[in-house]
Image (cartoon, rainbow over all chains, first blue to last red; front, top):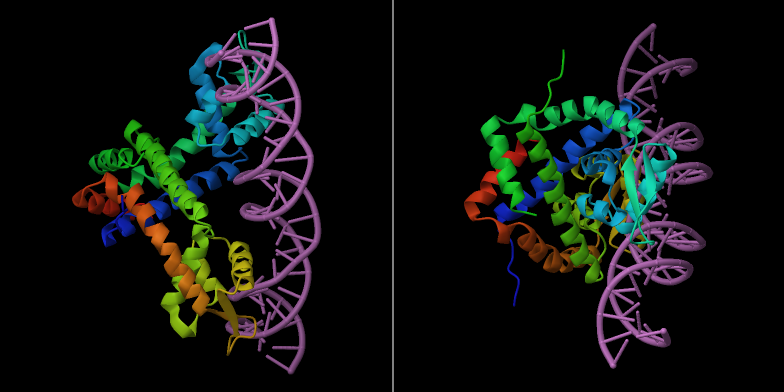
Length: 145
Length: 145
DNA sequence: GCATAGTACATGCAAATGCATGTAAATGAG
DNA sequence: CTCATTTACATGCATTTGCATGTACTATGC
């Protein structure tokens, strides 16, 4: 089955997708760094763990939520644990595994990061689109995943 | 001047932007790698140089087109030159500078890469949206840069 | 002119990343 | 049960990246 060639419009959408994400992402990371916070990936981990509650999450579950390879998750949680924002619990029923649980300090960090992260998102996206446009963009992007 | 908080829709659009770009980008890079080609950044450089013709481009001009920091460009062109896909010409009128010019081999590489890159874009974007949707997405994304 | 500041590009070093592989436990076939 | 396979997670090593700084030339102020 032969794969067809993209139209001009498709190529343009691709280029703009890359650029838009890059500039938004760059803006957000810059804001976090300027305020002395760790990168976005830390936020994502903490948010997922917070949602998971005291039951915690297995690393391989995190891997599916985040956009990271297995070894990326492995090393990321190592660093976050060292800083005391999560702890590793024994995993009953699977001795290979572990349950990652957010600490109080972790919850605080996530909240503090949001004070910078939220406004950065608003600046990168919200300020540039009407409410209707935002929803439309969201719908279209959903089709690409 | 206080910065406002994003709406749910804005946060969702942000999340989907990151995910959509990630999955599309991942797909394209994978396709290139599987076919033994260098990464996307090489293509971007070669395309810009091809457009610039025999006059070539200065590294700092490339830097603005591509989404790379100055040292990124510096090292990237070093590698591409070593593989023979571009050459550095003297820059008349500015002894600090250089003009980067694509070689024949570079033009061929770009063309060959397009045989994989094009279809990958089509698969990541074109196949998933109607023509009208693609244009709309493109318009919305343009507002974010 | 000279001194000072700015621009163009390169690079040393530390940290992050990708890739392949390792270890240990779980699962499944016989 | 036994052995082969798969899954969960970690890690050594090479490459890439980020950051700060270096070098060389240009532009500007006086």
